Amino acid sequence: MKGLVYRGPHEVALETVEKPMLLADTDALIRVTLTTICGSDVHLCHAHIPTTPGYVLGHEYVGIVEQVGSKVSQFKPGDRVIGPAAPYCGQCERCLKGDIMHCMNGGVHGSGPEFGNLSGAQGEYMRIPYADVNLVHVPEQLEDEQVLFVGDILSTGYFAAEKAAIAHGDTVVVFGAGPVGLCAVQSAQLFHPERIILVDIDPFRLEAGLKLGATDTINAKEQDVLEVIGKLTGGKGADAVIEAAGAEITFQQAVKCAALCGRVVLVGIFGQPVSFPLHEAFMKNLRIEMGLSYLGHMKKLVKLIENGKIDLRSLITHRMSLNEVQEAFKLFEQRTEQVIKIAIRP
Ligand SMILES: NC(=O)c1ccc[n+]([C@@H]2O[C@H](COP(=O)([O-])OP(=O)(O)OC[C@H]3O[C@@H](n4cnc5c(N)ncnc54)[C@H](O)[C@@H]3O)[C@@H](O)[C@H]2O)c1
Ligand SMILES: [Zn+2]
Ligand SMILES: [Zn+2]
Image (cartoon, rainbow, N blue to C red; front, side, top):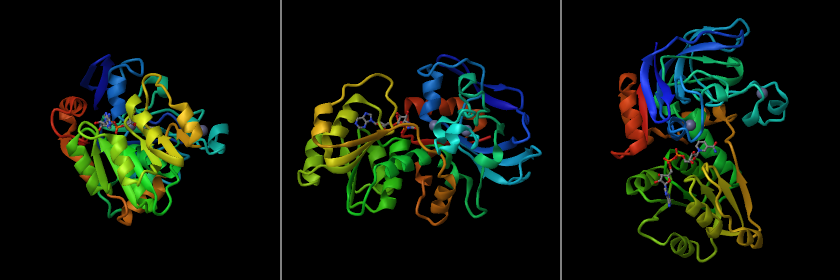
């Protein structure tokens, strides 16, 4: 089969690779019908996260079940499915505590031997471990594009909004209008805040945010972020802040723009240590949360999509085939065009 292989720092190549096969009786084999590229793939490609080369990349997918192991009871060949970027076993000590993020038998698809050696989504087929635990049926009336982001960036955006404990009438600030920040905006509006202020430096992405539920945007290149937030909140600051940019400056602004007893949630991943306005956070009694996102809400998110409460199709700015995946990778990374997400059909 064909797949986009990580060949070593800064090098990816579309190659013919071995088709995955069932390794355990709880596995399923799926044929990928739609996939996409994530910021994490770019981090892997540039060895910001060091991994052993030679594996197929990708961890966001929609697919059709081809084959199931003898112990898989909830899925059969022909079923249309999605699954989490980081599958889990559902039975280990961590999973039983609800901490599926740190499953002792888990890993991340398409991220190499260091992350469980699990099939990548930027190929024609994938092996899904613990299929009954991880896979989710896609309702017939939903298109692949509607559910493509559930297992990764939508779950992350929802995780951020949930951790931010947004109440009716709150003011929310989201830093970063990348795919994750935009999913956080769409998730935040489910909790009925009065305002969602979106901050980025890219006017195209800010505009995209307005369609997904942002009420105000701030271009950090042109405006004084803290001053504008101060004005919009009558000097009180934001009740809930989501940091989805992963930069030192946005982290500091996130702490500074939070109201007394506000919540700050960090979902951006920081490549380096950052300095922390601890005294300010302390004096304001802020609650700061962070971490790997929870991927156990997929069924609930599919329901919200079915009910029309979540619709992220507008994130898809480009549609390409697997044969063009190398080009897609470059475009996604270098943002030479106005790009948010690229849907790739094998
Ligand atoms: N917690 C998790 O489990 C999890 C899961 C997926 C991704 N992530 C992380 O979430 C973050 C966002 O991911 P993404 O795919 O949306 O990435 P992205 O790089 O596309 O988005 C970041 C956005 O921040 C904007 N930005 C840059 N400087 C800024 C500034 N000074 N002020 C405001 N905005 C600024 C960029 O223009 C961009 O739109 C990344 O750090 C990623 O690694 C975390
Ligand atoms: Zn991802
Ligand atoms: Zn587990």
